[in-house]
Image (cartoon, rainbow, N blue to C red; front, side):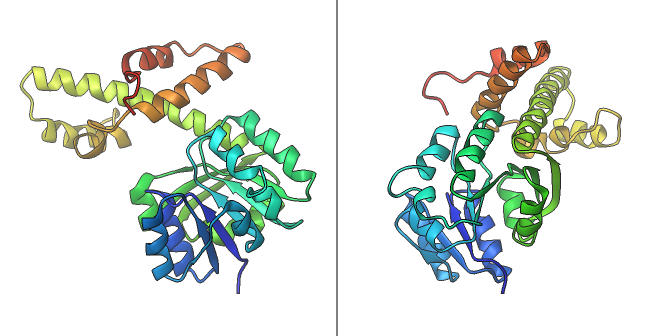
Length: 267
């Protein structure tokens, strides 16, 4: 039997990842504030508990898929937090999109308890989670990743170790810089094609065979044309802040953020 696993945050992406972990035969304990996905996972054999602390008490590897830095901190700290229940030698793997500095901060706190941390954001969305074809971008001690590799492999096909703690979060930001600018390019190109009378389905096929091909243009009509931009804009803000602090310029990303920033409350 492999390591015992915990999963906190079994929403649209976390739930299928958890389901694949169960299918791979790992004992799994889960927690979320939503009851419906917990019932579904319980039917597949997961153990459902009522707090992050209980997850940590029952798991050697605790995985997090919550929204942002603040939520990661919330599930870590307090009487019902992960750190209150985790045993020395266990590992916390953070799949949420967080600032690299947050990953380093959490790693230092966890180390005081003898707990390892990986920042391991993922890419591939719901489809990748369901098919088990996610990308894991991992920062932290390679020995910790080696221990987690069988669990990550249950839901991912590409698992890349990028360096020390914070490197996974940095890669996630870099990934979204390129994704955001691809989205901007595809939107402008497709709008021009439509205005000039071209069939957008045929444009998408033609783009696949040319040098302007990208995942965004390949799936523009099916996915990216209507995909919300709130998440991209949040990460764009982190990228611009990091770029400014390191003397880099991201003028095209600043334009993306200006053009796509959602109205207040429009998430």
